[in-house]
Image (cartoon, rainbow over all chains, first blue to last red):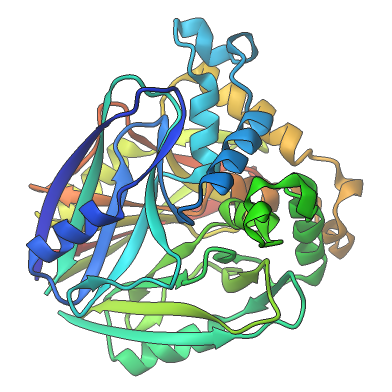
Length: 138
Length: 138
Length: 138
């Protein structure tokens, strides 16, 4: 069994945004040399997500509006913000969108359906944050 | 290390429904011959889910009502639908229910608690869509 | 490839609560002797979650309030409860918080960002329930 570990760093200039990281994950899978296995991609920060969906700007704006409805950025609303933070909402948005994805690696490539793309979801940006990419297999 | 890759296809006659796919996943795990490892089961389409919960019809109707409250099928509501689609809601429902499950394989079987069952969750049906099953281990 | 399977049991005295299980998972990863691989941690019951977020009591109370808003414990509300249960809400809360986490194991340890901690999330407590920990790798 082989295993490789890589990190990606993102500094998103706004509080909330989604970045298509599929090309970078494809590159890391190729670099690993693994033909058959699993690829774990996870946010290493607890106010960010990694998720798979469509690369369509209208949908991304829909997600932002919806997450803002479900967990508004209203600093007064969250007990968590009494610790001096203002990102209570981001911890909630991340639970809706998820921490990680696990993707099959088949014949050396991410084994994807027609529209699947991997996104880094940032909910408390404006500082560098990391994503972990672990590939295991043979 | 061994790895097997299989695909299942579902054509759900309605827009939204849940199908218990546990027997098919059990069959594929057995077919793989893998005794100890991990089994990834994921929707290959971004308007569908794979999730684990109870096989109880009342609960499934509760989920449908709840998802409809959280992300109504109202085509006017979503920017995504300006692309010509009418499935903006399905992309949101799928984020609540998740894309994938990872299940332990122990002594050649899915290592499940007493009520765990795997479901394919369809949110934009009436056409064939695929699920990926990847088993790795020894 | 090596694989180890362990179970943890929790009896939470209240209906809903979150328990930091990180030290126990770290101990099981160390015990496995696996240096590079993946660690799956999942609830074996369908009214409980395993998730990764912050160990901050204000945030945990925020989560409880938010989950109660999204899926209130109102036994009349759920068709599922016509089966004699009163935990329909718990099946919904678990979908928001997720069933499982998959964590990279690197150099014999959980490969975590600065604030990542693993929690058992209970939504229908007051009885013993189990968590599965599967580590595979080399």
